[in-house]
Image 1: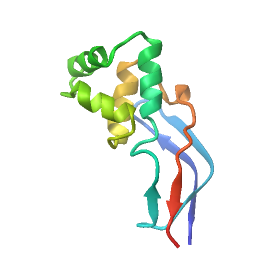
Image 2: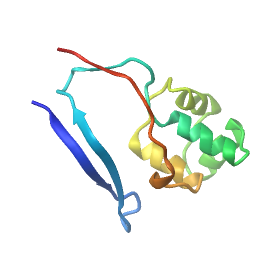
Image 3: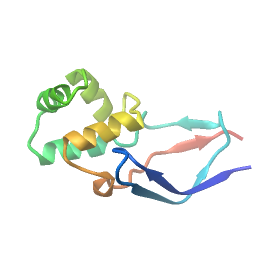
Length: 116
C-alpha cells in the first residue's frame, strides 16, 4: 500500500508556516527506493542561488560559517553536485543565509527506482 503526500507544512522559525505542495507524489513502501541519479534533489538549486548572487563556493562557506554552521567548501561542492545527502534543516539553513525561501525553489527531476 502506498501513501500519497499532498501537502506538508513546515515551520522553520516557529513563527510562520511555509506550505510545500507536492501534487500526487506517491510514497513507495519503506526500503524500496533506490536513487539512480543524485543523493539530494536541492543541490542544483543551491548552486543556482549561489551563482545568481555572484558567490563562489568559498564565499558561501564563509557566510554559512559566520551564521553558525562549520561547513567546508568541499561539502558545499558535494551537496551542489548531488554527491552528499542534505538534511531538511541544512537546506533551510542555506536558504536562510542566501535570503531565499521555499517558494523560490524550482522542482527537480530525480529518477527513483522502486523495487517490486
